[in-house]
Image 1 (cartoon, each protein chain N blue to C red):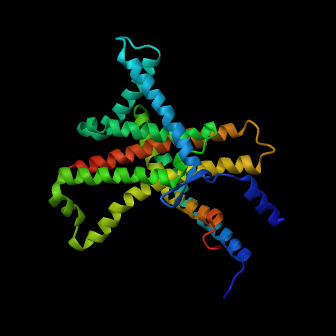
Image 2: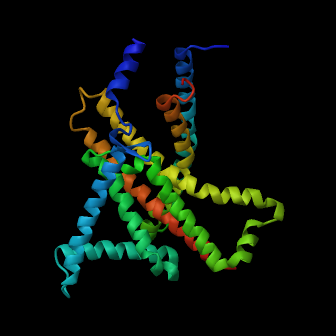
Length: 84
Length: 239
C-alpha cells in the first residue's frame, strides 16, 4: 500500500503534536518540587541556598522525560524519517 | 495556505547545522560545520582567558585586585563546589570538573552572541557523556576491584545482571541527551521567534535570550557537572 508524501507529513505533524504531550509529566513534577522547596524555605529560611540548588538539580533531572518527547517531535518535524 | 506556511517556515526558520566547507580525506568528504567553528571560537576565548590569567597569577599580589580577583573568585568557587559534593576525593577532580564546567558554560551561553551553541550538536555532548562513563568505570574498577564490580552488577540476584548493565549504559546517554535537548530547545525557540515573528521581533527577544541562553545554559552546566561528580563519588564508595 502506497501513501503519498503529503499524507505522511501530515501524520508526522500529528505525531509530533502527540509526542510533546510528554511535557505534562515534567510540568506536574517540577511544580510539586517547587512547592515543597517553598515549604522548606518557609520552615527554615536559613537553608535557602541549599534548598534552591537541590530543587534546581532535581527539576533538571525530572525534565529529561519531557525533553525526550520534544526530541521525538523534532525528529518527526525536521528530519522527516518516515517521508524519505 | 498550508503550503505557504510550510514554505516560509522552511525558508526563514534556520537552526540546523550547516556545512561551511568540505575537504577530501582518504576518499571521504569531510565537512567543517558551524559547530566546529563555534567550538573553535569558544576554545580560543577560553585559551586567551587562560593565558592572560596565567600571566597575571605569575606575578600575583598578596592583596588581589582587578583581574586577579576575578580569577581567584572563579577558581575558588569551582573548587568549593567540587569539594562540597565529592568530599575528600574532590581534590583529584578539581581540574576535570573545572574544565568541563567552563567549556559547557561558555558553549551554552555563546548563543547570546549569535553563535550556534556547540552543545546543540549531539556529536559534542555524547563524547562528554562517554568521558563521564569512562571515569565512572575506571573509578569503580580501581576502588571496588573486580569482585566489588561484579557484586554491584549482580546486586539483588544474579539474574538481575542484564538490567543493571542497561542501567549503567543508560547513564551517558541520558546525561548527554539532557544537555543536548535543553540547549537545542532554546536554539529552536529563538530561531522560531526570529524566523516567524521577524516583523515584530524588536527588543523583547532579549528577555527570551536571558532565559534560554543564560539561565537555562547555566542550570544545565551545573546539572551536568553535579551529576558527573555524584556518579563518580558513588563509584568510589566501597562497602
